[in-house]
Image 1 (cartoon, rainbow, N blue to C red):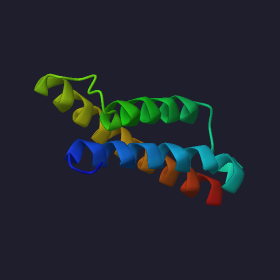
Image 2: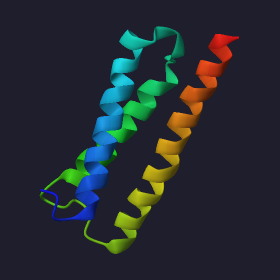
Image 3: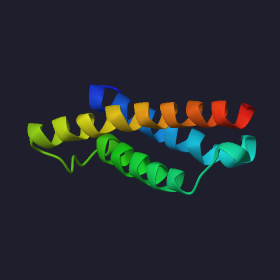
Image 4: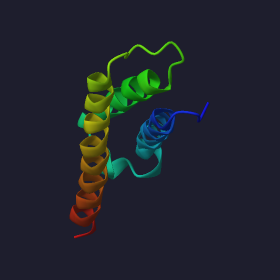
Length: 89
């Protein structure tokens, strides 16, 4: 399953989506409705990267998925840390 580095990125995306899905029960004050969109994007991209049938055949599509992954993950963590700072004041 981890024979391709893209599978690892897919697993990371699915794990982040699950963590964001658990966030309303752990810290409800930090969860916003826009996080639902991020959860869906992470699950869809992670399942595409993890799929065995390879819905993406071209290298350009793989590169675009990786380019989508990196900013989305960093945006999510930055957004949550800023919410933590605002809620602590």
